[in-house]
Image 1 (cartoon, one colour):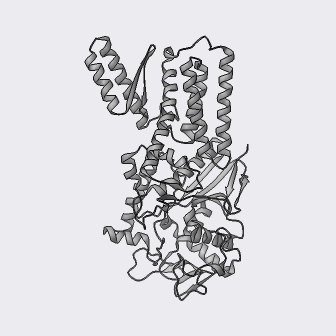
Image 2 (cartoon, one colour):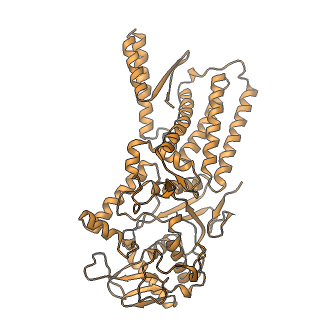
Image 3 (cartoon, one colour):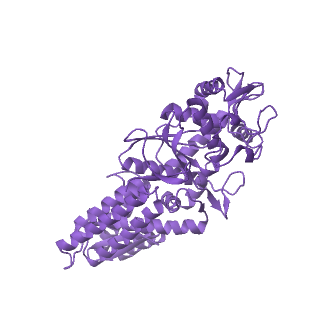
Length: 490
């Protein structure tokens, strides 16, 4: 089937038709870098990482833009997050930004999230934001008061079309700083007059100030992707006011649709409550990686539909770890047999007809995976198809009917889907690729060889010690007539 996407703007699935055939322009709201990223951020950015991977696997040329907010993201009390963080740590605001932007990319790299093609910073695009604000004033959608500029929501009749809210039903001041100088309580700031002691400020036609949070994304996305682009992504918690304001100011400025498909990720919950810094119920990605493998965290995130909420707990992550280990062990078993074909055992049931039947069964799993991903990036079903395939492949190996040709086909699926698309088997993605897991596998193989040498020399104490040390690390050795294999303990 062709790709369909749940378009939040329409509240329904729609066939994906890009603006330009064969190309996808995609924008995702990036982090505000004032502290370490937490698992809620991981849920969003791992999900969109897989979206981009699948689009590229499907043959599209993708330009993926994800911004860095380093100015203008105000709290409910009107205070800038960056400035508050800088005071907290007694550093310059841009020093804080550099520290946590690097931390964010370190976390994403550790999780196997591929870097965006462009990561524009809001502070580096002030001229573009000023020009867009000037255009909105010229068209009558914005007005200046005392050095600040506001967007008039009453001038844009479609305001609220993404969130489904009507202006008259919106609570004045809800997540929006209300100022008496506004013409309407729901008008939002495009440019904010800076107090004299405000550090992050720039000159503008309206005096020294800084941009509002919403104008940043509109200016940066349209600069690199065009006035109308294909996919806009982000977390569902930003639907109002941020995404709503993006649409209003962009479509008012340019007179064309802003983004054709809106994809919003569900929240990460802790005991039914959204994980967030403000509530203090968060776990940083760095802390999570101290206790769990990156692949297990990805497995947990992708075991939930991207646009559904997911409940976090240590028990859930332990279950995800076991699920990933089962997939990994299956892929490693296939890989080891292909690396050591002399260990492939075939029974009398292994006939050319049987081989053809097994390859056809693998093709069915391939089609199930493709169908799941084309159905609005349904990663839980896609993972399920790989797990079901693993069950069958292990059974075929045990029965002696998995020929080298069958194993090569299975390895191709693991490599393409488990590796390139889902990022769960990263060391399988390309021949000779790096990564901790690949190095670990090579070290285990080396220890197995040393154990074999010890047994050959009748040094059984040393051989048993190697086996026990590996067992203590959760690596189980299994001696077979054709050699020693290993797997992770479940």
